Amino acid sequence: MLDHSARTLVAGELEAVFLPDRGMLGASLRHRGEELLGRIDELERAAASGATAGIPLLHPWANRLGGLRYSAAGRTVELDPGSPLLHLDGNGLPIHGVPWSRLSFGVTAEREDALSSRLDWATRELLAVFPFPHLLELDVTLDPGGLTVETALTPAADVAVPVSFGFHPYFALPGAAREEWVLTLPAMERLEEDSRGIPTGARTPVASSAAPLAERVLDDGFASPSPPRLELSAAGRRIAVELGQGYSFAQVFAPESPRVVALEPMTAPANALSSGDGLRLVEPGDRFVATFRILVA
Image 1 (cartoon, rainbow, N blue to C red):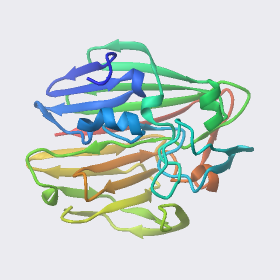
Image 2: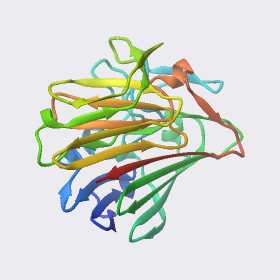
Image 3: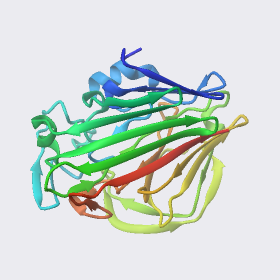
Image 4: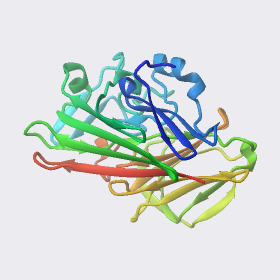
């Protein structure tokens, strides 16, 4: 195991593993003994390179920023491309916030089926990336039907904090080829993107759909006025990501390789720290809570 602090949760036929010392990464989700998460065989390599795997938190921004400079809540930030707290995509754009392997949560409570943790965003290194002191509380609860993830953000200074985090759960359904996986999406608005994967601000309504993934390659952002439910099914098993309070956006990522699908809850669209589109601020004295659930059947 990558982390000696790993915690295992058990409920019915489900078992989950989280790594508090490594960004509270979801490192395993097993149903009837079969693994449902993707890329977890690459945890050591992903940790070293800053890549995502399992169920990673994307904070303080989900997906890409449009460049190494952003302005939010009255502050302008110049990011250092050489910082170990940044991961850059093929276009040199900062992606997925501070890598999960660089964040350490302290466990505040635990039981057989639940784990609570907290991160104090207060170090000089973290504030150089995102100069907004805050507390981040992450609670995970496992029950026989699925996994609930609740994230709470509370300002820790007299400064409003922009909210742009998300999660990137990778799924790989056992017992069926990728071509047979059925992806079910509700009616939403697709966020039109430029060639770098940055939203342009235009939105296109799309109807609900349910079809085999086949050879499709996807990396699409969506907005929904009501929290959506995204599903993946095959071989008699169904995984659904149900977005709750705080999540009005989602990304669907299905690369050609590796054979995984990511159904990503997002509090704001990609590049929101620069564009301001969908960006919310948490004022001092307030608390922002976002919840999503992974259902397994």
